[in-house]
Length: 156
Image 1 (cartoon, helix red, strand yellow):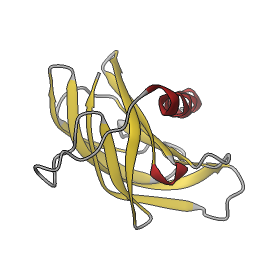
Image 2: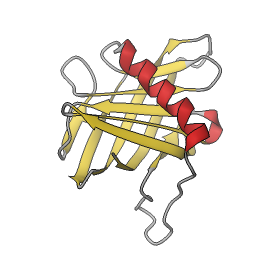
Image 3: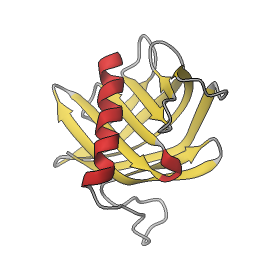
């Protein structure tokens, strides 16, 4: 799991320098523009300014940097539609980093949530997520972070 966390964080930080921005398409309020991850983190709207996804070996890894200087990433052992939980019997995990050395995770070691792939075709994946994440690295007094209303629309 540590390798996945490091991969999410490195991918996110690299994205800030290599990709353009992505925003809502404006036509449909619930539809995201391709290349976007968005959600509500602790009650505040968050959207990526750059995001990427990679699919290999039956697993999708995605990461994005965005507003509030936050980098978010998720992994799911699936490439087809379905709902996947976090934990020892789940197939999903997520990490959130604040750019000052603090990391929160929803993984086997703690936290919880679900990730739903609603569409997966032609190298594009869309879905929703919600996570409660626990601090695993850093000294922030904030021990948990909550992500609700999470959505993604990514190409790989």
